[in-house]
Image 1 (cartoon, protein in one colour):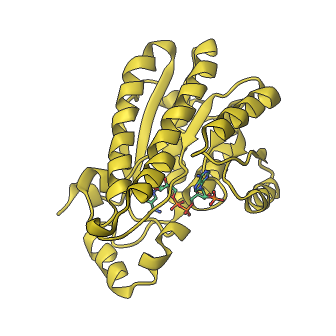
Image 2 (cartoon, helix red, strand yellow):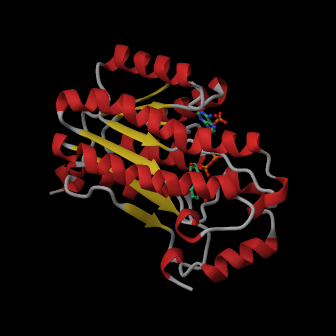
Length: 254
Ligand SMILES: NC(=O)c1ccc[n+]([C@@H]2O[C@H](COP(=O)([O-])OP(=O)(O)OC[C@H]3O[C@@H](n4cnc5c(N)ncnc54)[C@H](OP(=O)(O)O)[C@@H]3O)[C@@H](O)[C@H]2O)c1
C-alpha cells in the first residue's frame, strides 16, 4: 500500500521553492523519491536551498526564473525538458502578497499580484500538460488559500487571484482527467513563513490566529508535506479538481 504513495522516478517542478511552503513541499516530494527542480527568482538563495536539501541526501536541482515573465517560463520549461525529457508533477506555488485599503490599490499592483499568483499558474500548467499528455500521466497541484474560500480585507488581488486559481484547478481537472492527469489545489491556512513576517510579529494578530483556528496555533511549513505527496501520488489517482484545505479546521469553523 505504501508504494502507491511513492514519487520514485518522478520529475517534479515546484515554483517558489527557495523558502517557506514551496521549499517544504519540494523537500517532501524529494523525500518521497522524486527528482525535484526548485524554482524562484533569486538564484543565490535558490542554490543555497538546493544545497541544503542535497546535504540531506535528496535529489534536487535549481531552476531559477521569474514565473511572471512569459518568455522566462517558456525558456525554463524548455531547459527542464532538455535536462529530463519530461515533467510528471507541477506544483504551482510561487506567490506574492500586497496589503493596502481598497482605495489605495493601483491597477499596476493588482495586475502584478494576479500575474504571479494566477496567470503564471495557467501558463505553466499549459506547458506542463503538453509534456504530461505525451505519457498520459501527470499531477498539477496549485497552492490556493483559505482566504479565497472566506475572503479577507485589504488583500484584494490576492483573494481574487487565489479564487481564480481554485476555479482554474477545476476547469483543468475537468479537461485533463481522461488523459491520466489530475489537477488539485491545496488551500493552506496560516503558516509561519516569510510572507507572513509582519503578521507573525503582530502579537494581536497572532492571538487572533490562535483563537480563530481550531488547532489553536500557526502551522509549520513541513505540515504541508503529507498533502502534496498524497496529491502527487498514484494513491490520489481518483482525487481530481479538489481544493484540500490544510488549515487546522479554520475554513469549517466560525
Ligand atoms: N504562508 C501562508 O500562510 C500561506 C497561506 C495560504 C497560501 N499561501 C501561498 O503559499 C505560497 C507560498 O507562500 P510562502 O508563505 O511560502 O511565501 P514566501 O515565504 O514569501 O515564499 C515565496 C516564494 O515564491 C518565490 N517567488 C515570488 N515571486 C516569484 C516569481 N515571480 N517567480 C518565481 N518565484 C517567485 C520566492 O522567491 P524569490 O523572491 O526569490 O522569487 C519564494 O521562494 C504562495 O502562493 C502563497 O500565496 C501561503
